Image 1 (tube, rainbow, N blue to C red):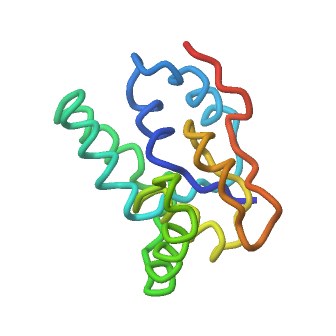
Image 2: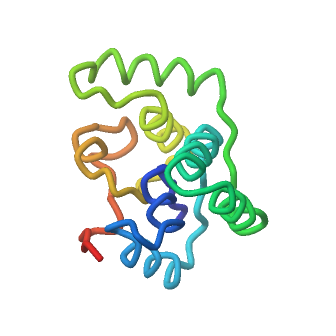
Length: 142
């Protein structure tokens, strides 16, 4: 079964100083399922890595996804669903990228989300399943 990735998990993987780095790194070391990255996650991840770490960190991230992770393109249907999600959950302030991950997971029938943002993703009720399975299941800090 495929897993869809959120920005925070990719930041944690790239940044050894991140409090969830070890946990996310362990997931990638043992995971055998395809990991799908929504295209909008890529520029957000690059921006955060560049501004909080370095250009080298950004480039290392780009190298790491080349050939190893699957990129999923944003569609018109995703755009419509992102608006619906943000309208319905307006007080939660999911924002564009989180809502995109949610919409794409629905479209692709993916039930597992790789994220360190359990608050947002546990609050959301997807159309295709009762709730997302969030991994890492237990967020250990360092």
